[in-house]
Image 1 (cartoon, rainbow, N blue to C red):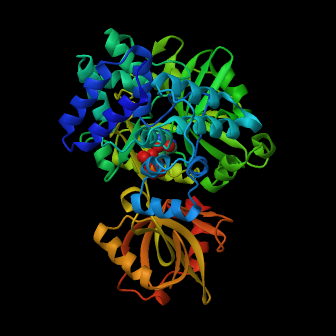
Image 2: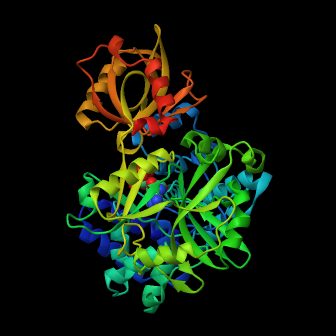
Length: 550
Ligand code: ATP
């Protein structure tokens, strides 16, 4: 059986060369030698997952569990671990170092194999409920007791979802193509349909890539929209009819229904069905077998409520208990499979026709959409969508196929940027990975009278040089040192853009900015000139009356 040590050595060799071509060739050479089961496992791990997307079992061995086991085996103190991490910036490297310092060596050591290690992890993943966390820690402990430093390094990197070998998806697909002499485009297509590189590699080795198709309960990646810069562009200059759909502000979901089962998958391809039990019935009634795409929103008083309401729902442990307080509606806008037929390559016009024919009812609704052929009607459609409480429009070409995982110009989103604020940095934290040695994550606040109240936290979108400069500055102006996190003097003003303001008990202001992005350092403003809580409150109120915005 293929050894884990060979897998680790192959990944290490790949990480050592900077040449993409060489990386692909090295990996292809390794994959070619693997028997089928090991090939499936290795390729899934390469994508940063232990189990393929959509698998109902979840492994969830987090940072804390890994550190706990490593400390247990090596006797390293909290402080040693955090210093080591700050120095190396990667938990896999920390694991390699601590495993080398193990206090006890197992009596006999069986070499770790890909299949053996996977079997152990997979079994741990099936444990549900109370004993789940303990089962996962126990499995990890057995593996790390056996592992050599290099094996531990890649085991931990697999578990934390980032192999850091410089090979992202496209190149992994190339490596599979090269390993089995398959056309790269065929591998890519199969991967988009299956979202499981392990399965794709097995098909490629058998010469069966052409049989790849959408499968029920195997979620695949969503088609995304580009930004609309000019309404005329959506119409392609010449008068072309497009579909102007309401842009709902919620979370994207892919629905699979087959037999008596319904599943909802998030954009990260995680199974989120259990959070929305009330949708099961109407989704079962919609049609006997289908895959559909849509947006889930909080639905209050016959209109979409701000995203923050949905967030409450996503955080709750017992979804039925809050179903009554925060009702949801699911707006479907695309149909990708119906019974046994894949619809991806049909034009949107035809997919929409079939979607409209389904048996909608209850909280599952058809997304509002209108065909428009000139700029003026497009603008009217935008205003109407805002009037219905939605964010704007997604303008779609009627002749477009559904392209999984693509963000092109076939779909264009049109919304107003919500706002920007000038905020004062009150805390700075070390980042991860290549930002491990610099203070790159900032907690920021606005004025409430003469007090600063926190409204959010952002990972820096600044240039490396600016971050380095701010790091120096913050280290010299730390008022309380909490290790990774430093409370700093309120001296630096940043301009941040964001998509919405939500109510939040996470910060002492009672508000949080949604998706804050740092635009620049406002060296031209003193902290006293930063924004106020009143401005935040006004923005919060404004978004609740979207019609005022148009
Ligand atoms: P993106 O999703 O494009 O990466 P984002 O997460 O910042 O960016 P937005 O820019 O607000 O989101 O808009 C895109 C999102 O809008 C889609 O991913 C989808 O979740 C949502 N959406 C709402 N209504 C529709 C619709 N009718 N068609 C497609 N997407 C829609």
